[in-house]
Figure 1: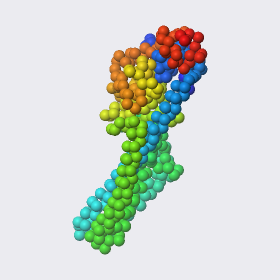
Figure 2: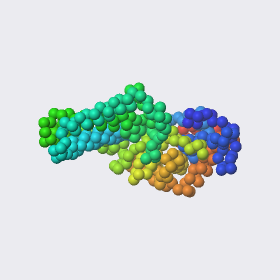
Figure 3: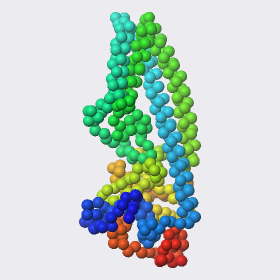
Figure 4: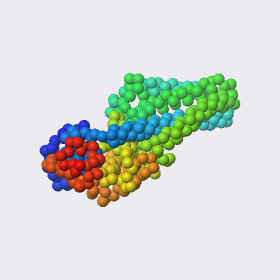
Amino acid sequence: MTVDGVNESAIAVESDDGFWRSDEGEALHVSASDLERHAYCPLSWSLARDGKTGRGEAILAGREKHAEIHEKVSGFKLKQNELKKALIIWSWWFAIIIIFISDALIFMTISKTRDPEDVARYLTLLAIVWLLVGLVAVYLPWRKWLDIPIQRTDDFNEIKSLDDTIIPHTFQPYGFIGGWGQGGKVEAGLLMGATIFGLHAIGLTWAGNKEQAGFILVAMAMLWTLLASWQLQRALLADNALEVARMEAGIESEVEVTYSDDDSKAGLLVDEFSGLRGRPDQIVIVDGEFIPVEQKTGKIPKSPHKSHKIQLLAYLHLVESTTGLKPPYGVLRYGNENLHSIDWNDSSKHLLFSAVKEVQRLMTQGGAERNHNRKGKCENCSRRYACDSSLV
């Protein structure tokens, strides 16, 4: 039997905590989708495990709608990253402007006992040293030689998904060792420092006096100001494109998407203790909290379906176990306007774990049966064609 691409053994025993584990002590894997199907109807869930795929126009329409949603959210994230990159580059260039102007004031007021050419020599020597160290760092895998541990950042308790945070993704992705022509953040800092020192040395060498040196630095600051203005224009255009993508994806302002499920790149969230795993549609950041969002297509109900709530509870637990931070709630979204907040508390966790343990029991002992007498459920079931207990 296969769940989320992982082969499952049906040989397991119930442990003292109620979860069903194999002889090796590993909890049986239960996906959030398993919980949704089981909550809808245990027999439908069992048919799905036996390889009976869902059929019907609603299934096809739902897949197309989900693909459209993911495409819009991915477009939003792409624009979001483009804006971050543009703002980071602009902030660097603006910092260089500040450096030039500050140094220009210093050079204009430099002590008469200090020759600008002497300062230029010191800066030239410093630039050469930084350049050589930077090049050596780029072409030699010094991180590996020094056995520097490779760890994920703990600064933001981030969830790895479609991409990394912008700086590590651009210069130093997770697992980066460097060397043999590759450089990371340290190398970039060394080379940038060598460039700044070199430009200062050139300005002082060309200068016949302190005032001239200051004038050259001010001129360089004006040139960088033009470049920074051009970069700021790019950032403003990126911000406008981001707002368009935000409206198309139906994402509220002040909300940042940190995770989006596209089934090919999004990381599977796993809790080894309970065996629970899954991929929420999105995880957004609201007021510093990680909030899972599950998007549902089709007919909009008056209130959230129990099966959808159980699935969202699974994602809430996975977010908490992955980040170490307890989300206050999750969001079920029906269409663009119909949003339902589902609280995450001890009662919700008890309900979730009870459902997980029951699914694990059925995986081991079998015996799933229809648990309702509603003809409407059977009529709308996508696996009714394979069910011998259907009410219609």
